[in-house]
Length: 115
Image (tube, rainbow, N blue to C red; front, side, top):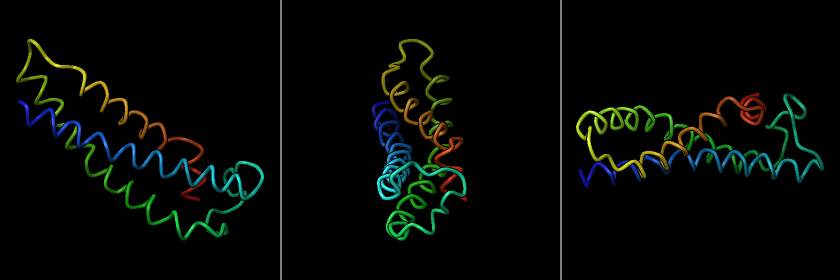
């Protein structure tokens, strides 16, 4: 079960990478424009730093979307195997990072990015 806890911690990193990379790009674009961008105003590809941030955001989003089903499966496995005495700390912390990434996926920031 020690290995399962370590895997939980490792799978908590990709959603944070996605969330932070897209937020940093959004804030940097806002700093360049003097205001925060919104859907189609301007198109993200029109901003000079897009070529810098785009590979990072795309790569971290892909890694997160691949790791999320694995995390979910391990969560179910952990709950089934350890009905009593669950150590909820890694589940709550990594679950929070997963929820943050899901919220970013359905946010106006991501809507602007995929424009």
